[in-house]
Length: 64
Image (cartoon, rainbow, N blue to C red; front, side, top):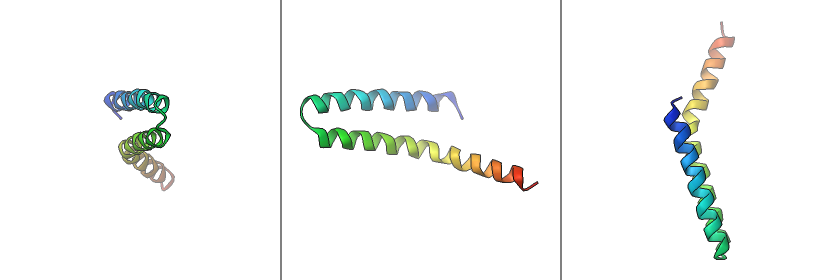
């Protein structure tokens, strides 16, 4: 896992937080929820390959 992935996740978190606050202040709760959901899905899309690799490594470790 590279350090750039951590910075990407942090940037998405900051961006989602700011957009969420702005949308909640303007009484657009549904859009704020949608922004949060899109941010979560984006981060999961980035992390899932690393989680799959982790499970493969653990499986290989126990299949010795």
